[in-house]
Length: 69
Image 1 (cartoon, rainbow, N blue to C red):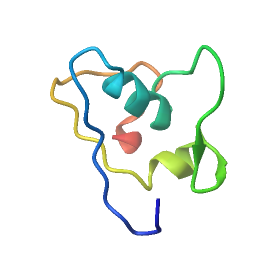
Image 2 (tube, rainbow, N blue to C red):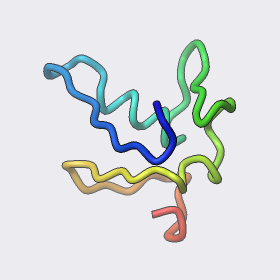
Image 3 (tube, one colour):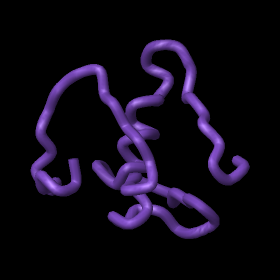
Image 4 (cartoon, rainbow, N blue to C red):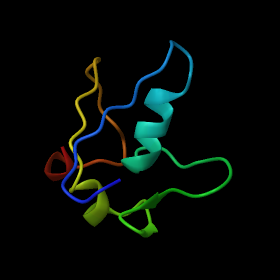
């Protein structure tokens, strides 16, 4: 994915789009494998701050602070 590009994640219900985004945003941890983001192993706050995420449903995540939102 080229730098400064905007992409969407599309697929049918149940395909894993939300789970994938949550792993990229470090909201949940993958059961296996790893997330690579911007050429680095993903999962850190610095990485997730470079991504916009607008979920359909509202919710609070236990490990997130107000600053993280």
